[in-house]
Length: 155
Image 1 (spheres, rainbow, N blue to C red):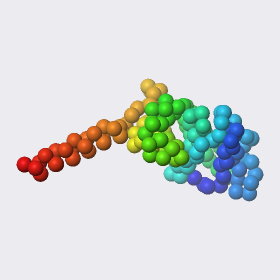
Image 2: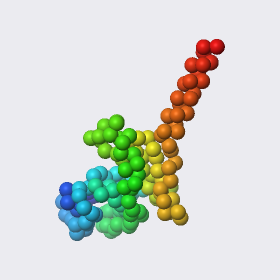
Image 3: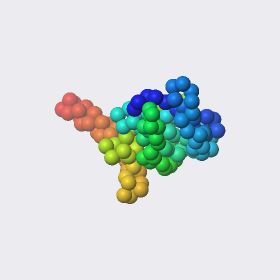
Image 4: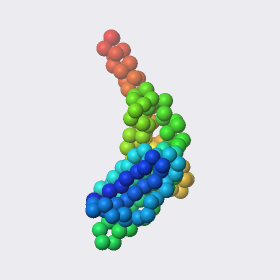
């Protein structure tokens, strides 16, 4: 990314994009109700992910500089993912939130990494989220491996 802009989120769900001198690059963008929770910059893809408190995820490819332009790569809800992972996140640290990080795949689709350890990728054709890493299954496999090692050492 050219890093020629600053993204600012408000408690009312508005997004401000300004250049490094403070000039607005776009009018206020209203992204939903409630505050903007987080931004994730994807330097290699020149993209910005924006997560609202209502669970809406927006991913934009941003071209800054003399020809400022915004292209939507994704817009959709991750509310179901947040709800499914909220209990595990609360056990870790409720103050950190449920979403750990948002990445972009090679085909510019979101990969959502939850604090619970679950990882989801959006499937364009199915228009659904796919669970690509199941933290519970991994933990279960580790426990089984530990049990096998303990049993082996006892023999």
